[in-house]
Length: 541
Ligand code: GLN
Image (tube, rainbow, N blue to C red; front, side, top):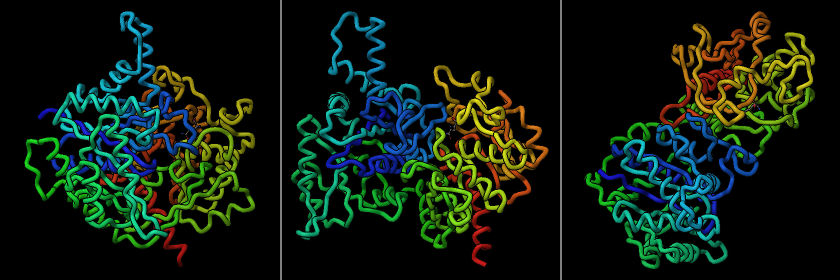
């Protein structure tokens, strides 16, 4: 079967959940046995989201091949269990960079370089690129931003051309918003009509419309939109607010979105009502509905924005569901934590995650939190910077190095237990200054993490950091009870620390949250939540 292309655009307002819709479409097609890949185009000029402030843009997601990407790729992976790569995340900045590099090399043979055709051709090339490396039945391309934005115009032109060139092998899906006006007691479809008009003015007739709405829309509204927008009535579906984003795929399937897509694309396989590939998904939804009892987890971090720790939040929630619990996540700003109030802030929590981060601000609060949970034997999971703060805390309060620190915080202190290692520089991928992407880690037999990973000895996890545990102090740590139980075998770097005598006190230099998916919750999060559930029972008694 030829590769088919699905373009997902959004209109009216941003934040409608295009990422979830794209991930859901991917899931539904995958459940029918098709090979799918989902890519995100971001119209901003940054080369990648790595430098974006988490306050503004939420988490930076990292692929196994070391690309810093938009958090929507996290949704794609969590929904489909398919690993994304650097080709799945493209920004305007990268498109221009590629075109300018070609221009400097003289590849364009003296031509005047213009948005059309050079930028649009580069966008088209990127859309088709994934399917040149391996076969995909469907390539889903999500275009960030909202129709009408100046920035997204070249992407729209590229889509227009591709649809023209590809005929039945391409389909355009437009996600819009239907607001409910309380004063009038009515739903309003005019913004959707305008948004579709805008799309049509760029030469794109949407094949399928998905209407985001906070309340259920009656058939007559869907019909009205269909007839005003030149779209078949079966190709207009609604995406109502759901109690959980994981219900979106089945809600889309119930309305026949996948069948509409297959029909529009003239798919050779007969669309079938029953989708055996969704059995485990339904099983998960069932567990989610059954999980009623709360488990309270504190997230000690500094970025006070839900999306800033997106993958950690999802990983905790998923692991909790598989343990029959509902994760109640409490953000605790590390900048506000002092030795005087730490007990009050953390006591009600069954477990604490000390979150990743960059820069000095808020780190002392993380160190105080690590000390408190260690002394009070509260399940604690330190991730990346969180692990580094556990290590510094241990050096200060157990090893007796009062001035222990990390070079990131204070390059002048004599006891930098977190240092910029020579080995680390050697294995850092070319060009970058950070260790990015998946690296191997050897687990120590008999450790808690070894058990958690199902007695695997060699695992692979994704990294995003500059600094490393300083091996000069390793023996002292081990002698005093903090064990280095996960080691990078190529460069002898400490990837996991654990205090075995505590119920669950583990820090990982890598980010396990990037690999937790709906159907395969990450073993470390599963093990952590189990310890939290136990602690929760004790708190209740
Ligand atoms: N800032 C720390 C480092 O660069 C930790 C980074 C992180 O938490 N992702 O090593």
